[in-house]
Each structure stands twice: as structure tokens, then as C-alpha cells.
Length: 70
Image (cartoon, rainbow, N blue to C red; front, side):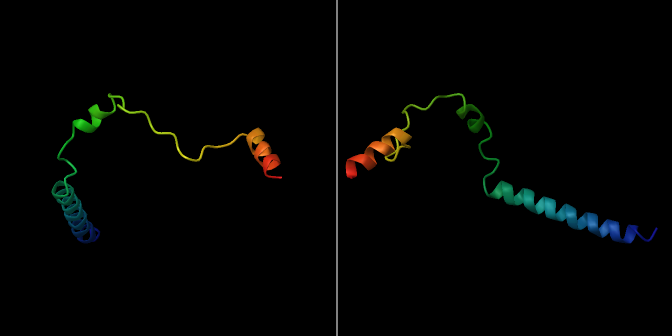
């Protein structure tokens, strides 16, 4: 029966932490737009990605560059 004196305050502290986190999430805008992220994955990107400046080279290309520089 003595454990109830520990569990009731502990549950109230945990409940207040959970409520605080919920209100923080609401104030920071976590629940503002729930629909558009789900619909965004259905649409393709309009522009293809630009190729990066440094592309991985094949071993043959690396060998030809080292032979050219010699």
C-alpha cells in the first residue's frame, strides 16, 4: 500500500510532461498541415536532378588519365 504514495505523484509528473510535449508540438506547428505531406509523394518532380560535377570514374578512365599525365 505504501507504493501508491510513489506511483500517484510519478504518474502525475509523467502526465504533466506528456501534456507539455503535446502543447509544445501544437505551438511549434507540428499539426498544422496533415494532408499535403501524404499527397506530396504521389506527384513526380518536375525537373530531373542535375548531374553532379564530380562523377565516379571507372577503373579504365582512371588508367587513361594516369597514362596521359605521364
